[in-house]
Amino acid sequence: MITVPPDFASWLGEEGAAWKAGLPALATKFCARWDLTPDGDLMHGYVAVVLPVRRADGHPAVLKLTWLDEETRQEPLALKAWDGNGVVRLLDHDDEHGALLLERLDHTRSLLDTSMEEALEVTGGLLRRLRQPAGPGFRTTETDDLTEENDGYVPERFAELATELGAELAKTAGNTLVNEDLHYENVLRGTREPWLMIDPKPLAGDREYGVIPLLWNRWSEVDGERGLWDRFAAICDIGELDVDRARRWVAYRAVDNWLWCAAEGEAELAAKCEAIARAFTARGL
Image (cartoon, one colour):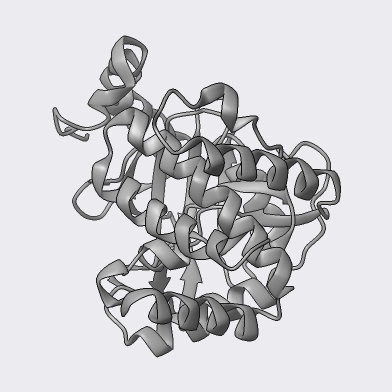
């Protein structure tokens, strides 16, 4: 039924290879279970494949088969909680196998293709709208002692400051259902609403936790440090966020991701995170 690209999810190792080998059978199984007919070419991201399908009544949808880990496992729970409010609608799911049946959006049109102004209006609007309290079962915004993880990847003063910030923020974090990976490529053109969010990585915490991906994505359009602060200010204004708390979360997550990317050899994102970390700690916290 489907042919999985050989290089898909190669970084998942042996366990991932076994999962990938089983994807054709899994697609066949859920097309039969949910009475779906394939209706387009297979697509994939980092940890999921997506097959356009039609339901028995002819309505378009997509079958998503995702690798299950702590970030992806709770996606159906979050989609049910948001219930289509600015977010792709969940039509059916199977938690054991990581199978989700979702409404079909236009995957060829995302907020990467709009003006920066429109992209900020839409994503800031999502941050403003999505204030649903997180129910039980979601991850929380726990933070790490970055000094223990730092092996010369970032200057020690950044690891120390971020560790202190993270501990303070985590102790006083709220309980809103947050997507920690909201960015422009994961907001697609819809029909019942102009733009809908996909692929959430949900957790319980502060809305402000979700700001930083909107800074490091579309990075080439950031006009220096002034442009970075202007984008941050626009997100906070449109999203009705606590500016000071957002600034602190950005600083913590910038250092956390800078360290991780440097350790993993992800030089491009590490450089972006370093620039954000330096800008957001330079003014004092």
